[in-house]
Length: 255
Image 1 (spheres, helix red, strand yellow):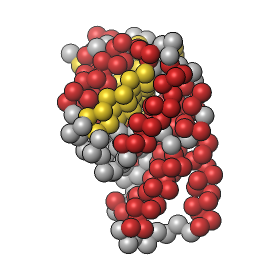
Image 2: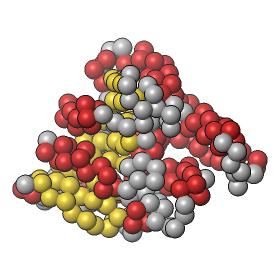
Image 3: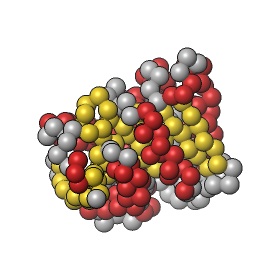
C-alpha cells in the first residue's frame, strides 16, 4: 500500500508519499515541484508512480501557492515568479536535510523534478546543489536571464503595466544570473538529466530547453545514457501520459 502523509517541515507544507512497509527506511528520495499557480496535490500521479518503484517522494508547496496562498491574483503572482523560484531553491536545502536527519533519505540518492515553474526551479537547483544525483525537467528553461527577458517582453506585448521599475529589473536579472545553469553548464558534472518539452508550448519556450540540451551534448559524449531530450511534436504546455511515465522511469534507471 502507498500512503500519503500531509506534514509541515520548517513551516513548509509538503505531501510525503511512500510505500507503507518502507515508511521508516532510508530510501532514495525524490522532490517533485509543482508549476506556477498550481498546487502540490496536482502532482500525486507522478508521486504514485515513483513511490510504486520504491522511492520516497516529497511534494512541497511553493511560496504564495496552495496552503501558502497569500491572496494574490494570478496576475499579481506573476510579478513574484522569480521570488518564488529562488525561494523554493533555498527551501530545498532545508527539506533535504530534514529527511536525512530523520534517517529517511539516502543522501547519495536524491533526485529532483518538476513541471513548468517546478522544472525551472529544478534546473536552477542543479547549478546550486551538487547533492542532486539525477533530475527531470518537464517544460523547464535553464537560461534564467533569457526567460525573464522573454517574460517581460510578453507582458509588454499584452499591454500589461508592470510594477517593476528599471532598477528592479536590473536587480532581478543580477540575482537570477547566480542560478542560470546556461551560464555555468559545467556544474552538471555529467549528472543524469531528462528533458521533456512540447514543441507547441506557448508558456515556456521549447527552444530554451532544446538549445541548452544541444549545447551540452558534447559534455556527455562518454556517458550519453545520462542525457535525454523527449520532444513531443503535438504537445503544448501539458505533459503527456508518456512524459509522466518517463519521469518515474528515469529515476528508476538513474537513482
